[in-house]
Image (cartoon, rainbow, N blue to C red; front, side, top):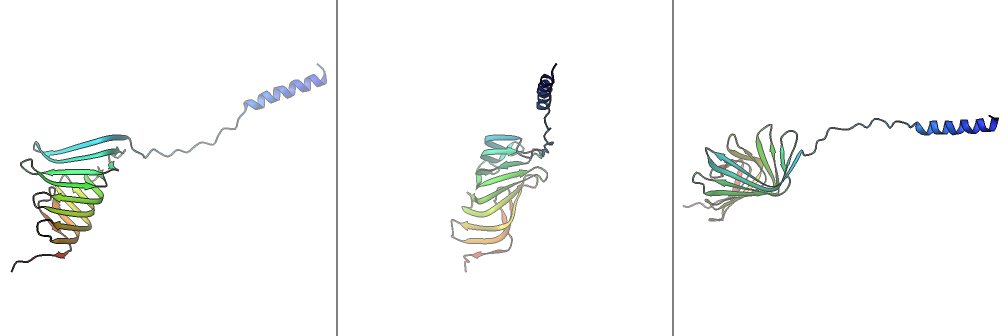
Length: 180
């Protein structure tokens, strides 16, 4: 084999050999997935006690996470029922979430609660509900309007039973009609 043929064969072999070698990409560091594990559309959740319906929640979307927390990123509508299965109170909010570790629900954004029996409307930016204690509460500003009398009650914070038939306002203020 002459010198040019040898050089050509060597260059071709080296080219083939070198083209087969690739730099390994640096190991890609992946972070654990923290997004939702489930996405459920048109959700309806029923909560009962002793076989009696107490709360019905409807929302167009539920996201469930690794922690078993649930997020309701769209409007949430909740109905609270009394002992005779009558609709006592309705609630609507822009969004909500369920926190598994503390077993409570939170609704947020333009929360409007209407007590049908008392004909009262409550507005607040956020409410929490604990199904174990059957209590509703917030530290946020609340405004309550009596549709019957026009009285307005305001305060910072609220504690109520789950159907809102009884409540107390923390740091209350407002306009009241007093009979003489």
